[in-house]
Image (cartoon, rainbow, N blue to C red; front, side, top):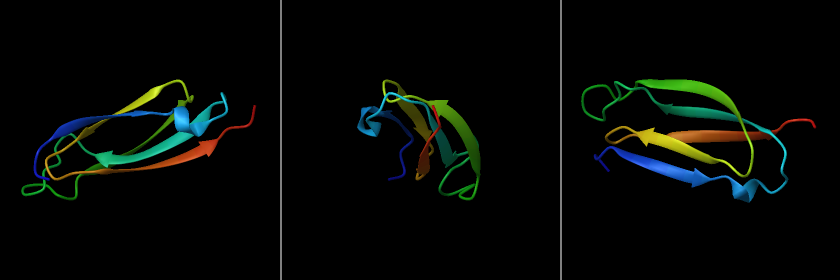
Length: 72
């Protein structure tokens, strides 16, 4: 919807306790569905299943996330 929000995603569904490369396509800080709908950024982080991914979604925004297991 058109309301900004924070989403917390526990990563325990990843299973194995190993690092994952997490690529996040997310709203840029200036994103807004009406005034700046194409503002986004791409970030890559290393995370483990015991962590929680926190996303700040812009008004009318969203995110896409890619998980890739890293070698041990």
